[in-house]
Length: 231
Length: 231
DNA sequence: GCATGCAACAACGTATGCGTTATTATGGGG
DNA sequence: CCCCATAATAACGCATACGTTGTTGCATGC
Image (cartoon, rainbow over all chains, first blue to last red):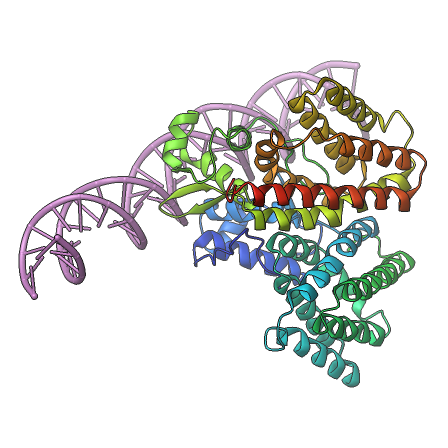
C-alpha cells in the first residue's frame, strides 16, 4: 500500500481512531474492496468500523485530499474512478517528478547499503520475470518507486509521487494481467540503479524519463484500446 | 492568496464554517499574521474565530496536509518555518512541474481569449517594472504562475504547483525587497507566453525551465547569503 | 540547588446531540 | 399516467460533553 503524505518531517502518527479509519479505508479502496463509483455514508462506515462518525469523517476528508474519493454533503464519499484522461494527467506528473527524483538521488551519492532497497527491488523484479510471477513483479515495481521517492531526499517531491502513485494503483493492477511480461521495464530499472550508483545524475534522470515516457504511453494505449474507460 | 488543492473537479466549496476557518487561517499564515514558529491551540483559535473546536480542528488538519503547519497533540498547530533547504526542495519540484505545465498549455492551443490571464499578468509585470512597484510585480508574478497552472489542463499538476507555491509565498515576499528589480524574469515570462501562443511546446518548456532554474538559484543564494536561515 | 516523583490541570480525541438542509416519498391536480 | 407541491425524513455540519493522556508545577529527598 501507499504511504501517507506528511510534510516536512514524517510525523509517524500513532494509533488514533481517525488514523486507523484512514488506513483501513485507504486499503479497502486500493485493494478494490470499495470499487470505483461506490458510495458510503459517514454513519454507514462508522458502524462498519466500530467508531463514531467523527473519526470516520476525518478519514474521509483526508482521502478526499488524497484524490481517492469525493465527499458530497448528502451522498457520503464516492470512490473516484480513473479515466484514461486521468492516467494521462498522472503520468505527466510522474514523468516530471520521478526523473528529478532519480537525478537527486544520484547526486546524493549514497552508498550501497543505503541503496539496498532499490537493489533488492531490482533483484525481485528480475526473479519475478524469470518466474513469470506478475503480482510479485508489481510488488517489486512498487518497492522500487517507493524507494526512489523516499531516498531522493526531497519529502515534498516524494509525497507528491506517492499520491499520484496511489491514485493509479488500481489501474496498474487491472492492466497488469493484460500486458506482456515487463522485461524491458525491469532492465530500465536496473539501468537507472546503475546510473544512480555511478553518481551519474543526468544519466539517471534521462534513463528514467524514457522509462516513464514509454511505460506511460504503453499503459494509456492499453487502457484506451481495451475500452476500459473507467477503472 | 493561494487556491485550495481539490481534485479532480474543483468542488467549489460553499461557505461552511470549516471552510471559512481554513481560508482565514491560511490567509493569516500567508500574510505573516501568524509568523513561522507561532503556535495556536484549537480552543484558542476557536474563540478567536467565533467557532467551536470542530471546524477549527478540521481546518488545522487541512493546513497540515498543505504543509503550512504541523499539528502536535498538546501543542496545537505550529506554523512551519521555511529553511534554505526547504526552498531548494520546493524549487526542485517547481523546476519539474512548471515547465511541464507550460508544455501542456502550449500543446492545448488555446486562443488569445483563454490565454488572456497570462497576457494581462505579463502586461502588469512590465508596468510594475516601469513603475518600480515591487508589490505589484509580485502580484502579477503570482497571477502568471496561477494562470499557467490552472490553464494547463492537468488538475493534479496544478494543485501540486499551487501547494508548494503557497509554502514558499512568505519567503518570496521577504526576499522581494532585497532583490534587484526582476526585469529579466519579466522578459522570460513574456517569452514563455509567446512560445505558448505559437504552440511551441518544447520551446515553452525550455524557456520556462531556464527561468525557473535561474530564479530558484538566485533566490536560494540570496537566502543563504543573507543569513535568513528560517523564514 | 538540582533531580525526581506525584498531583493537578489542560488539551485533545472521540462520542453524541441538535438544528439545518437536501432528498425522497406522497398525494393531489392536470 | 405524469408532474408538481408539500411533507417527512435522512444525512450532515457544528456544538458540546466526556474520558484519556501528556504536561507542568510543586513538593520532597538527595
